[in-house]
Length: 442
Ligand SMILES: NC(=O)c1ccc[n+]([C@@H]2O[C@H](COP(=O)([O-])OP(=O)(O)OC[C@H]3O[C@@H](n4cnc5c(N)ncnc54)[C@H](O)[C@@H]3O)[C@@H](O)[C@H]2O)c1
Image (cartoon, rainbow, N blue to C red; front, side):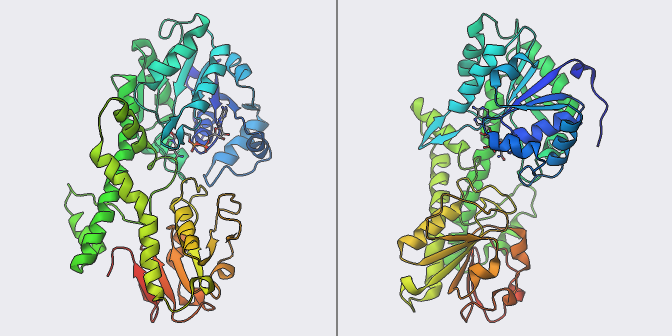
């Protein structure tokens, strides 16, 4: 999809700080809109991969866009954030903001902001994308940018524009699926943001009245998901006690437009949903408040991996000693069909089995390298290698390929086949005479 270049982009260079899951697709969206882009990342490995045309995660169109832009001199790659700031007019920040323990870690964002400040010029624009606690852009970012005598709004634009992407279809989300959420430090920044973001966002731009409101909006999306997943996990337990199938009840309940019951599962992972509620909880604590529902939902979701391991072990009926029992865990990705395992519940699943003395190995079709699994836990994309001779199969991630499995896929596993389906992804008709425990089913 080649677009005509907008006038705002004439003679303007855009630098993008952080070319990961979010920054990579942002860079691609601007290149597809006809902009000249400087991609900045501290990972020289990542920069070399892009130069060599190696696919950008599991995202369609990104790698091809980078390759053709490099050929046409529309994309420059560097790890020098100060030079990139000097040489660009619009600076977009997409570095991670996560947690260190329970503390919010703004170190990458602050580091990048300092680099930008050293190259900031009159009439430049700075756009902050990571999800951050309300107040961060104005109270932490702005003072750093103003250190060199330039004043926000008077001399440069400051904008907050949270990225609303689903890994695996990020570019489509940016360009087509949702309106861009935008807020500026003042009227000038806001107007500039509206015209600029309107170029790449087909669904238009949703203007918010303050930077803090836009920052909060993004966190609320995550809190909503986390709380509702926790609710699903709680209702699953209730369904078990009263002997009903959660999935059937959910489907009927959701046929009414005010009900949006979520999927239960082995846990909530990734850099977003389990993290944003913590931002809210921590910020509220500083203000002397408790976010009771948000905090309790976090606790429920954090407990799910261990809860599911207990249910899976119940299938074994203690026939063999744990050390002679082989568990095959399917899926390391934090969610189905992603290459990202950050904060994946599978780590807790594996550690819990190990703690109880079981032998564990992990299958994932997309993740080939990992340094967080225990050393003696094999990770492979070869399904039969992982499941052969296994005593129990534990499905942790809803990779689509698992929905196609049938009992022949596990022909060399011990009989009867014991499966814990923590994502309700198996087609049960393919597993006659197997013993399957599915989350939400009795
Ligand atoms: N992953 C998602 O689905 C998602 C969705 C919406 C919003 N977000 C937000 O976007 C932020 C970024 O997430 P991500 O998934 O792209 O992270 P990521 O880890 O995939 O990518 C971040 C990139 O930034 C680079 N980086 C780190 N510190 C840097 C520095 N000081 N200078 C230059 N580059 C640096 C890293 O090398 C990496 O390539 C998150 O904090 C989150 O708030 C993520």
